[in-house]
Image (cartoon, rainbow, N blue to C red; front, side):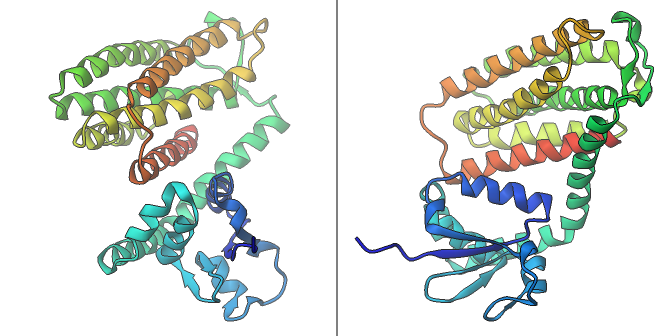
Length: 319
């Protein structure tokens, strides 16, 4: 058999958003037929014929096996065609109305990109700072519960937990506002009670002065995250909840791993582990209720939900 023709992807490996995006695609079936070029490591002013380094850093580009160069939304659509899971979506965006839509969406992203990069880099810097110096500490109300002073990174994590549980309550309220499906209503009502309990538990150890100042935003974002898929039926709701809870499981697990089960914050660690196990149960229940794997559009929506959750955590830790 002859070697398959290759698509070349040019991306900015110095951008934290781009790194995450490309890492996702490189882990998918079909990535082995793609050549991945990190433009940030190229010293020459021209990356390849007809594409300068500056242009490649400013905008996503691909070159197909015939030598045709594409950028922006059209480039993403061409990459999706290379991935079996997204192939139908990529082909759909060949059509002019949808191509116009994806190009305009990508142009909007470029306007937001500097701010999103700042948030992502601050999140990375915060993690590095916490790992280098955990001696920066502050007292919060409720610390008497475990008898210890809490480091700044733990206060920030609790702030993000409180913001997340606020959003989770809003997600299920959004679902219940829209859906009339009795099965989904029972599912949402049961989970809403659990999330309300989580929120109360976090509020008991995090005083108002240390909570996120963006709580109205998290409520709106959560409500939309629940309401929008509810418009499209049970499968969309279950897929969305599975995506949200997959992220929350990782988020709690990272915090729990940093807390010694026999140390000063053992009681707090146990609380977070209880919350995590509840979220894992929610995730597994949603996955079991799905009667089929999500399609390309739903997979893209779930990825957006996961990325949005990560950005919200980064912001909540700071504000």
